[in-house]
Length: 196
Image 1 (cartoon, rainbow, N blue to C red):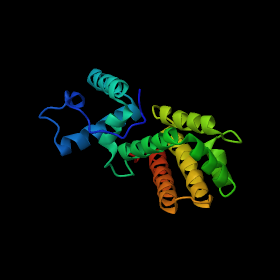
Image 2 (image 1 turned 90 degrees about the horizontal axis):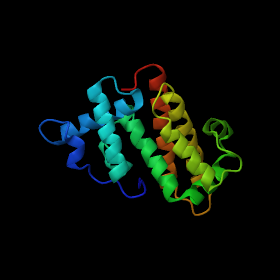
Image 3 (image 1 turned 135 degrees about the horizontal axis):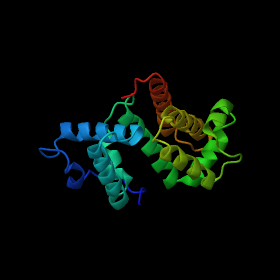
Image 4 (image 1 turned 60 degrees about the vertical axis):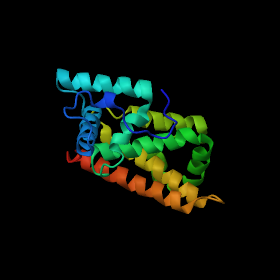
C-alpha cells in the first residue's frame, strides 16, 4: 500500500454502494459513514461489505483515496480526527529523520506529553514511524480516545521541537500544535460519547 503520495480524489469504485453518484454532499456523508465504521466497527452485513470494499480500495489505491473523504470534516468528528491522524502519519513517513529530530528537541519542553506519546528514548526515525503506525492501526476498537491522546501528545512534542530547532518553520510548528489541540479535544469528546 503506497501511503506516501499526495491524496487524490476518490474514484468511482468507492461510491458503488452510494445511490445517485458522488456529489459533494454524498461524498461528505460517505466519509463520515466510513470513518465511523472503521472506528466503531461494522454492525450489519452491508456495513461489513462497505468496510471490505473500502479496505480493498485503500490496498489498491492507497489510504489517501479514503482519507480525502475526511479532508473537510470538522475536527470534532470521527472523520476529522481520522484526517488529522492520516496527515500526521503521512508527514512522519515522508520525513522520519526530521520528525525524530523534532521530537527529540521538543520533549525537553513537554515531558508529560512524551510519556503519553510512548516513544522509546532516544527516538530515531524507525521508532517515530513505529509510533505513528501503531497510533493509526489502533483506531478500531474501544480505546480510540487513547489513540487520539497519544497522537495529540506526539504532534504537540514534534510541533514544539520544530519551533525550537534552528531553521525551523514556525508556521508549520503552530499547525502541528493546533492539530494536537484538535486531537486532544476529539479524545475528550470520545470519552464522553460525543464524538460522531
